[in-house]
Amino acid sequence: MIPLRDANPTRRTPVVTIGIVLACFVAFAYELGLAASGGEAALESFVRQWGAVPADVTAAWARGDFLSAETATLITSQFLHGSWVHLLGNLLFLWIFANNVEDRLGRLPFLLFYLAGGAAAALAQIAVAPASTIPTIGASGAIAATLGAYLVFFPRARITSLVFLGFFYQLIDVPAVLVLGFWFVLQLIDGLGSLGLMASSGGVAFFAHIGGFVAGAVVARLVLSLPGRPGRPPARAAVG
Image (tube, rainbow, N blue to C red):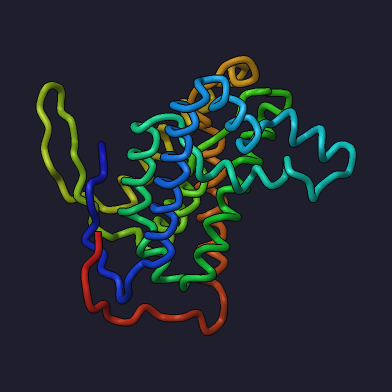
């Protein structure tokens, strides 16, 4: 099941979401340029410097150095990607779901939420493989936090999804609770299956997805529980 767009209108232009998309493209263009000019060794060095390496983060924190370059990688790693598929897959989910969460929270609160959600996701991955020397990169942890918030804020929103039925496929409008619930269950299954392998090999950071999703859902639930929480005024335009 691949989500393609939602039928959940917004009342203003998602400036922060657009900015994040552009920042990811700029960072990836820099990676491509670095690989072209300096080769794979230069790119690997760059990714190791700015990606979140669990062993480096835990070592820095063990010596009490919390305001370190290693800690900063919890943020910088969110804008790096390993391939076009990695980048475009993440940005598809970001574009579909982030605009509504930004609209609900407000621009600055959403930016802080997004970055904090990505950091929480990276910490979840570090927690299950603290000795790993494999850099964790990508926006998927922060996007997972956004998905968790979307599920809490808009569980009945209709998501147009590409559903594969054997050799056939069909476009179906599915409630967000089913689309995102199915996605989260897959992350749990794959995450449990990957235990014990993460310290020595790369791959998908499933626990970053899990941790980010849970963190985003918790924050959204707290927002809904606040007294006098902002309502959702009628939208003027539909943005997928």
